[in-house]
Length: 287
Ligand SMILES: Nc1ncnc2c1ncn2[C@@H]1O[C@H](COP(=O)(O)OP(=O)(O)O)[C@@H](O)[C@H]1O
Ligand SMILES: [Mg+2]
Image (cartoon, rainbow, N blue to C red; front, top):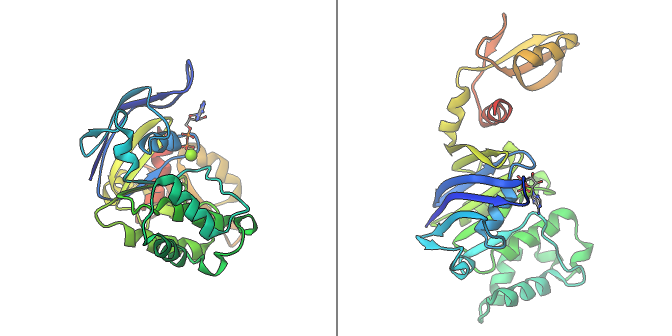
């Protein structure tokens, strides 16, 4: 599978772009799409899923122009939109049957497929209860299930871990790893820890632009040998922040342990192994 986004822009009105001149080539594997709110993640994913059209540029899947031939994409894509809504009066089984009919997924195996998905997403015990009675995490898992009904080869989940508790996140992670063979999987998030343990590739975007794209090791290289920890007084923090990029702080014996990124570390600092969170903050703050 090869998905090419070439010079794509989405202009919402006279001066407002969702994304601008955006290019990226995505191949099989799990891509984590990271960016703060408003970065343009949903704008991009909706266009890939063909529920919105670019104002400029080309998107191809395996060399097929999906702006002209949306059905080529639609047959193969599974999409969980960020604002996914459910019908509260249907139970999980009924809702998935309904979604299957909408997508033209049928056949004698459908019931088994639905049961498998409900099992895999830990919803089988509640499958006969109306979805309106579900928790946020359960509704989110229904959204994930509907995206997988047609055995998609390209799976797009927009902020899938929102509302999931830690245990549900682990299940989700395992499910994704099982799916990922011969598929393109794109997961968006504004939280690094949601994707850093599952994503092979990482793309970081801000203000409708791609800041970096590559495997995690390469993205982390931006901050290699620039991450430190030091203990400072609480009162020093605001000034410290004007000079260095502070990743996190924690209290330590009445003082503050600060993890920060800098070219010029202060005295007494300890060098730390850089991680994706460091690189993300660095790129977002310096762009
Ligand atoms: N329908 C719309 N009309 C006007 N502006 C929009 C619309 N949808 C999104 N935007 C703007 O486009 C930018 C990118 O939004 P979005 O793609 O939702 O970002 P993200 O998903 O990364 O939070 C934001 O500035 C947002 O306000
Ligand atoms: Mg979004």
